[in-house]
Length: 353
Image (cartoon, rainbow, N blue to C red; front, side, top):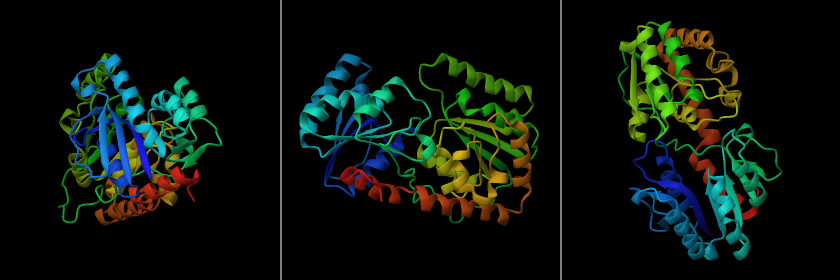
């Protein structure tokens, strides 16, 4: 099988999208060839059966050039593909539709987000199948949707073998600095949990003045609450650095709202970290521990405070047991090793079982 994969970026140094490189490597183990048409190309070590072609954003943003390179790439690559696979970008599915029709190719779109844009609705009509991580992670009803689980590299995101216990009780949140991620809830909770230190890993979306002001307001709130000495903002980090923080953490927090099945929460769980979430989409992973690991809404400061008090008061062996249980559930349901054969089966048959 030969797959044409359309992505926004190939760069293993990018803190937000480095996982795409991991996906490409894993997919290449199950097919004959992967052709990647990417908006922007950076550094990546890839197997011999992967070939990358860029639209050229790494040379500076130039929409006309990027669109021209997209169409050249599609003309060169689409005739030889067995399937056109767009990752998280409905626009690519829409733009690829004339080539899919011209050359008789099936299109599959991977999408996990609550936002139902006009382009997504158009892409839904054009795609043969929609692949998503969980029933709650695709916002539109359709007979085309297939639930495959998230693709977490549980070999990489794993607990440390011999990491010494930390005296500081780190509470880690990995998310871009945006109001929808509700970092203020964690700040206010940390103010009421004196033995905890909050670590915020994530950057501000480029060119977004609104989010730059929001990031500044977070630092100001920490100062106002008198907890600046117990708060760290790291900015965006490489995947290995994120994993190292997870391995040091006592607890992780993910405050994405309903409709977002955030892979950052799954990565912390894969590292064996008890993770407090605010979305019911995670209930199947939490099982009987949902009462101490989920709050009712992202703004529930009291609920988060209560759960942090409880979790940080547990003996370390009990806390680690919760983490082991979380890792077992993520590995069983959302590992990259599980996802890729299911994805290839979807390409071949339209079904995952």
